Image 1 (cartoon, rainbow, N blue to C red):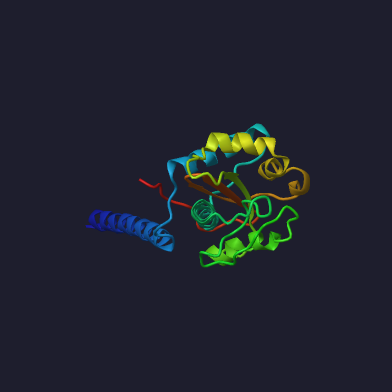
Image 2 (cartoon, one colour; image 1 turned 90 degrees about the horizontal axis):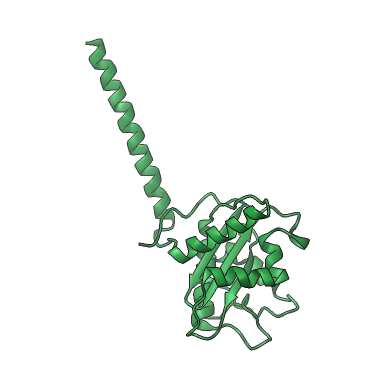
Length: 202
């Protein structure tokens, strides 16, 4: 009788653990039901982390919030083209979405427009910093390998990736990546996101 009761207690404990695990995973999915990572986004992450490893820098954790911002911006750049020649660069945002639009000029006069996007779009209460790669040519296909090669040649973007120069005192704890046709956007933050991307786009 005692053995049977002991076995029953063990079975109930195991059932509780299974149900708790399922419930936790389900609740995590409900927070970002439409958010997932494409193969290209996962490859971009791998390339950046491998490059940071070569520089003896730690890996950065995925952020669901920053990924939402990155994917939103890559789509906005591709579809709405918020750029005006040399006046507005790829950190600009169009007026075609539920966010504050802005023309990001070479003088960085609209820098706050970028920094505030994680909070504005994803409710992530921290500043975000972006590197972007692409072309306004709709026939252009942005690839992770070409993006990283391009960023390595651009001191400003390169320094963000490897925490150099003005970024040397920052520790990136969150990263989000968006790849859409002719654009790739990568966002970094010094605050860890409690919600991570948990599924691939299959």
